[in-house]
Image (tube, rainbow, N blue to C red):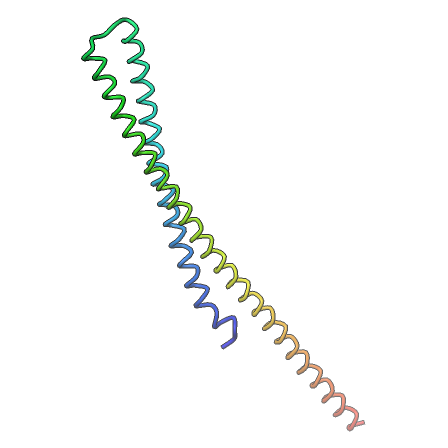
Length: 149
């Protein structure tokens, strides 16, 4: 068995690990996008609610209603803060998965390059062997032809 053939199972295993890492990376991207979209929705809703509070406050409102508005805005701010934490956490996990995928991709490329080098070396060795056989046959035939003359 040639060196390149011995490496092929390792290449297949590395490719499989790379594909798994790529799927995990894709899933982390989806999770981050979902969490970011939720944060964007909360920020938009908070902005709209604050504008409504300003509009209604400018024409006058009861102390109770003002208290309720402020309490709700405070709850929204807490939710936004929590969601920002989730987005940051998802971004950190995504970066870790990206690095893991990159590491697996680098290993796969290195193995692919090694197989290609071995195959190239094997091809050159085979070509030299064939050339040597051809030369020996030519020398043998030449010697036989010389004897028969």
